[in-house]
Length: 354
Ligand SMILES: Cc1ncc(COP(=O)(O)O)c(C=O)c1O
Image (cartoon, rainbow, N blue to C red; front, side, top):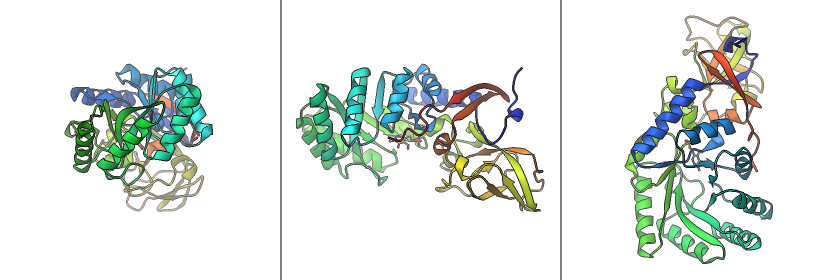
């Protein structure tokens, strides 16, 4: 007996598989049309079956943010080419990295400082493996990354002199115009001038995916959010609400006043992520409603602007502000197609933050 999405108990995190597949195909086609390798970031979904769909569509490999995610994806046989976009520090982690390098055909990692480079080199020596590394460049975002093109050259040179270290290229997040382009052009000039080959230049971020052609130095692209999309992605101009695959199904459990509804999904499902979005998610059936705040298990909704208002017991679908964090909140995500449940995906890398 097919199960309708309407029969699901709430709260439930649901993904529309037609939209997921269209999002995967669109991104792959965009990147291929610019001759760019697609290396999707799996932190958005943390589900091996979806990473496999991305690989089948033409991705060259995947990106992970944490070693635990790499381990889950490697165990599931998703890809034999994985990039870890995070500084790996400490013996507990370098041991795990060395084990992964032995298992995978190609495993690369980023670094932005000499301390990380030394730890990696020592692990490489201990295990008799070469560590392929990319220099992470802060081209304007203000997170990890060397602070200038000259610093990228200096760190590349220094790390290359360390035993068992193999320079593969440059990585940045996110790609933003025009600063990323100018920064990378200068770094590539300096590396070229020093006679250092740069096989990989890795850019990323879903909002700039459509304009990836404006960064001609890139060889590969890492997008994550594009597979589901969310309010943040729509606000950034990278998608429309029709491209949003993930919704949180939530029941109206109370209508304490004429203008207030309370949902059975709060910060323990949707999280407090807001960034530049207004409110805390978009209710598909009531676009004029505003989710004004959460308790852990309550979502407070202001209905003042709604001509029609939901009844107690009604189930609504909420597009979350940031899909990647909602992924980490529930054990499973339900795949539906045209309103019918097709698959229940355990979020295998949920909580793998080490
Ligand atoms: C290093 C890195 N690469 C790629 C991405 C993917 O970005 P987006 O989710 O905007 O597609 C992220 C997102 O956090 C990231 O941190």
